[in-house]
Image (cartoon, rainbow, N blue to C red; front, side, top):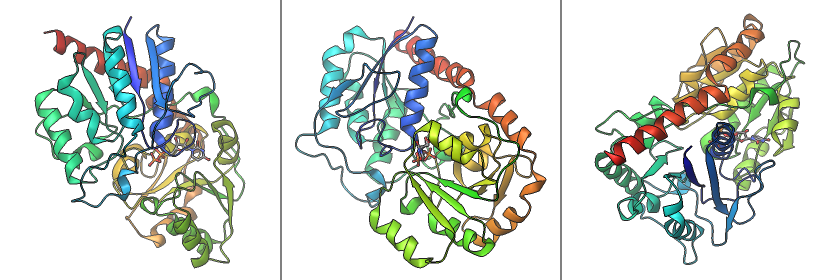
Length: 357
Ligand code: UDP
């Protein structure tokens, strides 16, 4: 049995959606590790809540700013009463009770602290390269603690140009929570944090051109951006349903003809892609980052030229070529909790073997 301490993202309490896909990933990895008989303790900002994981250690303090708002050359910013620092102080105090600490925060501090801890730290990096200070500390940690940096996908890992190949762990979901739907209604879905790097405006433009209603679900992270998108397409057939629970979200998603993914950045993974596939919903995405590694072009969706609204529109007109059952099957073979658990458990054990050796 492994004793694992999971230290969460510092940009928001778990369950709020502010942390994006890494919240669901942390939750799923924790559930699966516990199911396998390992001990998992989660440490997260105060206000965190996950159904069926009630025993989160809640840490007070100011949240970190999101890394997406950093310019390339910006310095590391840590507030005075930092929840990030407070979580890692907690981890320092209890480390002797655990075999391994797992960092889920895309922040400089946990990487910097790694050599000062007596227990090994596994860093799960949830986004591509965004600013130089972070790139530098990730590279230093990768060089010094071989194999301890894990990514979602190879395209994401490439953005850091590291000297070694690092584990790519992908993602996975509890497939029993996503119901297959064979007969969709005439509507499309767009899911995720509403923020500029997600390119929502292109999905809205495609809905506007095809006159197919677009259901939008997710946390509004950037209010000004959301208003700008709405103002640019006042007549688009869009409906904003809010930030929904997995259960409510999949009920809406499963009825859609396709999920549109319009990332402007190198999307590290895109949990929403596998959630759609699990419901039998094909994914139409820009050929960029994680979705380009997930979607089987022409089989479980379409990969289109990045930033091309016409590309999206053409793919929408061809959506009936995709067999929805094949989409569900892909999710079952590649993205189950068992597949996820196997990859993470191996990663954790490899780190422990190396740290003892
Ligand atoms: N999500 C949700 N409710 C919603 C819309 C989205 O819980 O109404 C979740 C979704 O399950 C996914 C996350 O938001 O886990 C978005 O993560 P993704 O990996 O797609 O992108 P990120 O935000 O990490 O860039």
